[in-house]
Image (cartoon, rainbow, N blue to C red; front, side, top):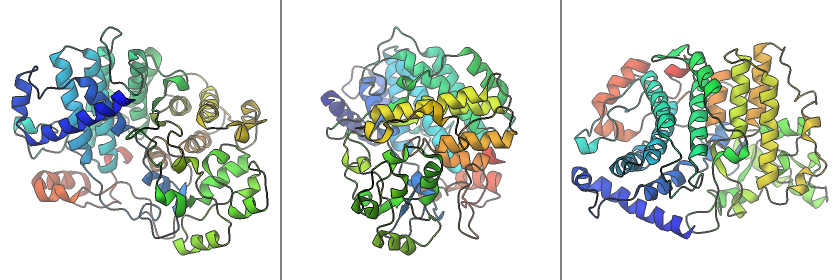
Length: 491
């Protein structure tokens, strides 16, 4: 881990160099001191990409704040950042370039995965984004044109196909804090991520030259995919500087952040012990000496109520905080961008939709089992929470059991509800996008408030790339840049 910290430092310096010097000069001589081993860039990019995103927890009705009006909780956000271009993508592109110099195809393949990951994230937030012209400042493109969301999604699917073709077991992968140099696991993640993109396009028949359902079936039927939680695309944390859990020592978690009742009640209704790993008992329950596994000792606040109403629950000692492991445990659980459990839910949905053959129930059951396996593996003192629990029995209970013969919407609700229940502090904004796409689970909203479909473009784009931005706004949203404009993937 000490080497990882040094790698991050070196990569951070390189990011600054790449922004402030002539990049053509850097590329001229691979032996020049400005060149860098791609392993350092891999460490830096991986650490950045796999961090926990807490804002989604509010938008997805999992957490609430009690010390002020959180814009995500009340669906009032505005613009988001393009920082991924100057940090993650810039270093990713340089990693690919450095890998080409030494003819290492694996760094190139992983670089293509991270390009796809970042561009997917950016496009899901905004819609059309700079893609084909992006990160080409060294070629003199300082005001990149915007590509349509369809072009971006088609492009990253192609990049991931290229990554799958490049990955091999011969070229060494060093600086790998995700899979410790295991190319086969990277291949599984790359192909599984292709399926994640395609399932998010379930409202579309085609994307570019790809037929969504046909491409999904081809990948699922012919490519190696994640097969257990050991294949999870996740970052494991370490108790060392710059390597600790994202929310470690976060003051808000210890003071004003609490659980939403919508999220908590799903677990209470199903007698699901994963609740105990996410939430703390209410103060009243602790004072009454209730066992930690007593579901009556947990309560959440209403995410649609004024924050002052939820503050009153705090005063009444009748609301659960987030489990303190999320801010007191330096290592805590790993943070995933795509887990085996999520992949199995994706396969369950594709089966229910008729894209692939087989049993949706089998994939659904596999997904739920994998989720419990994850928490039983990584949560400290897991026996405190799961003692006597049997997942096979859980899967037969009325609110959990899956029926392959049920109508599609019933199957989707079952899949999305359980998928949502696995994503506390995991997979960034995935649960919110699933809600926008399927309507499940049915988030509570304030009267007169609709769930935003996107973020506004950053002010910097208005300042420095306004012509291209306005062209993109006109073609997508009739010139309106607001959070209720519906992007292509949802139309």
